[in-house]
Image (cartoon, rainbow, N blue to C red; front, side, top):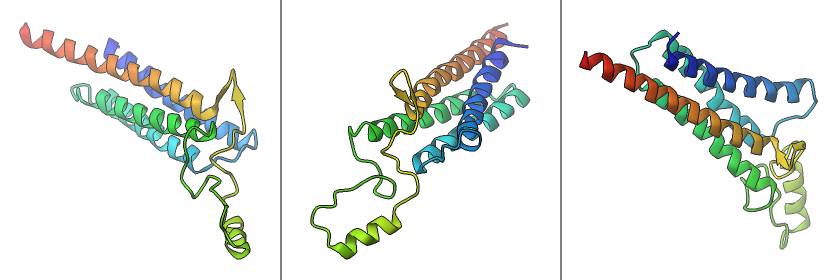
Length: 164
């Protein structure tokens, strides 16, 4: 197996492990995901598909860059979500607490009744001071670096093959 394929396999497997971990927290641990938690899962699914394509089509040298983009996308959503959880900035109004000052009793009741079951601005689990969103951001950043290393490895192999 080439270095590029090894790196693609590790990065792809990393996304699979993070996705399985999220499902484990949800279905085994009973922690229902919020809207932004779900958003973070889609790029991992894309990275897994991109990895499968990259392993099947070894000459498609741009696929690892797409894998890096997927990993950076979920990392970015994770950073945003962690910031919402820490109250550094506001999240989407559809899953965060908004300002209730100035609302009438009926508007407040409507807001309560339309609120999601799981809010994006609450931390249901954390380890070493990082929430699941924070861990997703850190680990997905590492996966992005692996994808970039795979791309560089594939680019170096194709340029050295062309010069021979």
